[in-house]
Image 1: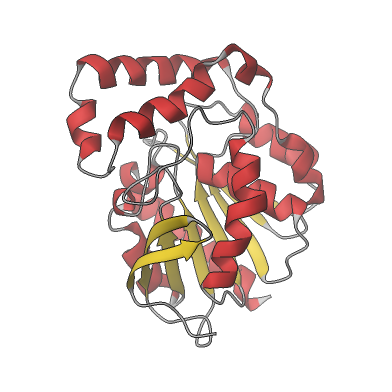
Image 2: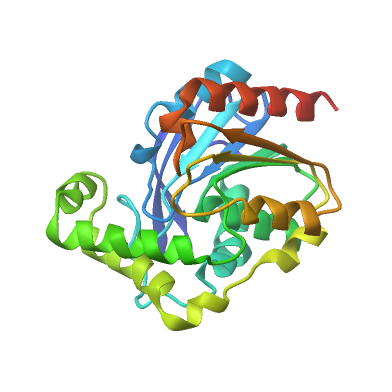
Length: 263
């Protein structure tokens, strides 16, 4: 299978997903597949994908899920299990479309949850490890409180124009995502059952001051996983350590990737 160009759109069923590909292709080097946060997209990763490609020598594939960035819209309201559906239905097709051979999944927030669900529900021997940045396995009180504050800032402050730079339909993106998390039924959301079935090493990177999750998220992984779980708790960082502590984040992530790919 030939690899797609360096940027553009992937046709996945009825959806068109925007993407970027940095560095070597799957036939030449391992591939790191980046899965963005709940309000993220290709562009909102900033310089992190390019720096990761340089630091590791791997190819880096980053894409916007349906409903984000310039990708196709998604039907609203989202279902409570939208992350499980993404891991079950969309991600396998993306990996097939790019000719994924071997490498790691690198997820941030929602993307980290999707990566964990995928690895815990698919026996995909191509995936050698997971980098989970600020993952969620349950919905906590602090998560709900911070999303409530984000929604207020979006409706009355400067967040709407900032996010409108990146998303084709910023209202559908923000409201479609936050409506799920703020709904009363989502308080029981729990994906920890998948962790016991992950069979590859995991690195969890979390900001010590993460406003969207507590150390309970890390404890759940340590309690449920039978695979090795490395933890990097980064001081001076909140929910986006790749932006708030970029040097420390890059160091721990590249060290982990190097160890995994050597094993």
